[in-house]
Amino acid sequence: MISIHHKVFKMHSRSGELEVLVDGTYFIYSQVEVYYLNFTDIASYEVMVDKTPFLRCTRSIETGQRKFNTCYTAGVCLLRAHQKISIRMVYEDTSISMTNHTTFLGSIRLGEAPPTSHS
Image (cartoon, rainbow, N blue to C red; front, side, top):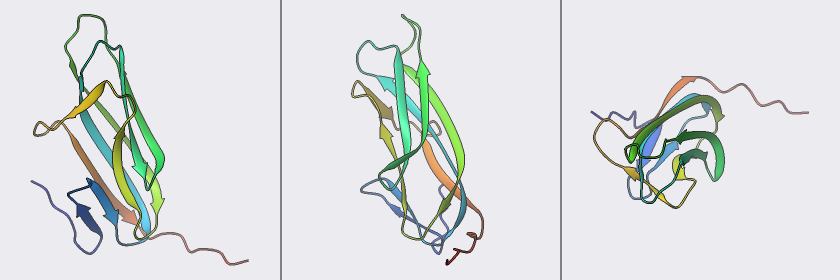
């Protein structure tokens, strides 16, 4: 079940971006089921805040192993209103499997943003 607090988040379904509507400290989490299109021994994705990498998850596989693997990462980040969270694959020879319960991206607002200091 997907639940989004519409006063805090806005999901852009076409781009896959999750927009933050309220300044605050956020816990960002994601898991991606990676499918290896060609022979490769590594797969990696990044969680982006706007166009800047915030988190990276990398998995390696042994030769002859299955072509699917999951990779989970999470972190805490100060976000301002209208910043967008998204996922980007690092290598071209991998893709995201959208199987239920194996690929997800989310965020939880932990609290207020610290006041900005004016010098």
